[in-house]
Image (tube, rainbow, N blue to C red):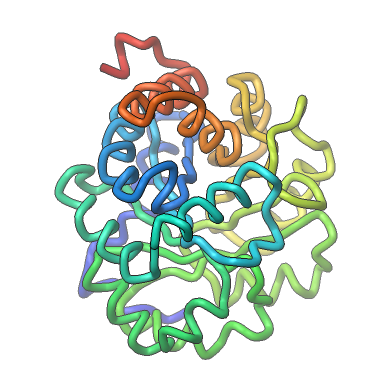
Length: 276
């Protein structure tokens, strides 16, 4: 993937280089923009970064999030009920940048949303909003060239999303046009907290390693510190979604940031005092 990275800082690559130098497993967190209340991400995300999040995925709410389990589906529904739009997501990214410094920001969503907005317009807006990468759940690598072409003008990564069912051919194709890091789904099926990290997901990491030098993050099912440690034996980062999103909605809105920070601090192996 040819990018114009000289025109801007590649925050994703810098972050993973720092993690490697520190000998530490990264922690990527997912929140749905507009959940549990309209401007929640602006209040919550800086607290999550302070608690130990190394990168942030901002979920673009969508009416048919087919890759999501009940927790994130519900968060998307609530966000849409709150009137959240793709423009709100872009504005949120832009507003967060001064508050979180060089922490990478990734938008995660579905392709219809981008097509409706317009790929060229969306790529330009992402650059203005200081977005570092995109994860498009329902966009196969073989159909991603038009989006990659627009993103490459601004040095924005299209992050490959791969599953245990991905063929060797699809893995090769996806990593050849993608960048930033590779998101390996640990299980088949939808998102949701699970009791342990799937061995199939960890085996996928090895298949991906054979085909790319990009860092690898593992998600779907991460909910405890031991999951992060298990992932760290094979991959570069763990991704937490459902466990965090559930905590944000599990109580009064004004305490959402504190609840989320506790989840992140525990996963990062930090004390509550470290997160303050």
